[in-house]
Image (cartoon, rainbow, N blue to C red; front, side, top):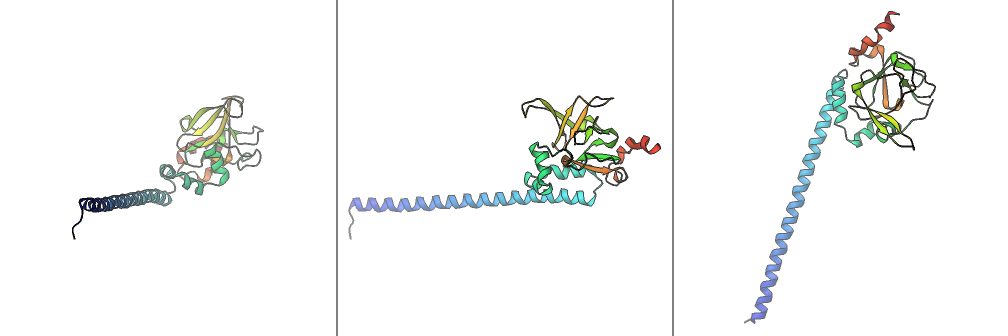
Length: 219
């Protein structure tokens, strides 16, 4: 059966169209598979890194550098799981806990206060004083290099915010109405801190700060 030139032309077009559709479909399928494989491998790699640092920290809980590494590797989702809602609100959303209804405002035990997230040593009980505000207050940090001060213009006023350097956690604010010898008042949130009693400091890897309590021990 002889076909007209027009019919032959139309058949050729359909054949080319089918081939193009097949090629496009194959290319899209290949792209989807490659993307899925990449995401899967990336997820496995991230999960392994978190597991390794977490296991290392658990194996040697006295190593504060490993504690810091563990938290630095945590995603925001991991931190939400690790912290209580109030702790997350304070440290990550710059919140403020209720006065007189927090863990350390009236804690008088000797020891140090470390960053809840990174574990870095921040403040000592030897510099803690009764401010009457309902929040734990200190005249100075153990090491100024462990805290970062930033201008805070929220609540229609200008204040100086205090954050931990390694954990980048919101701690509270510092004011210039404290007692001597510094005249400063570091007003902090208990929810951003973890207290390490002096008798546990060596065990938890903070032995280098025991010198802070030498005078207290001699009294």
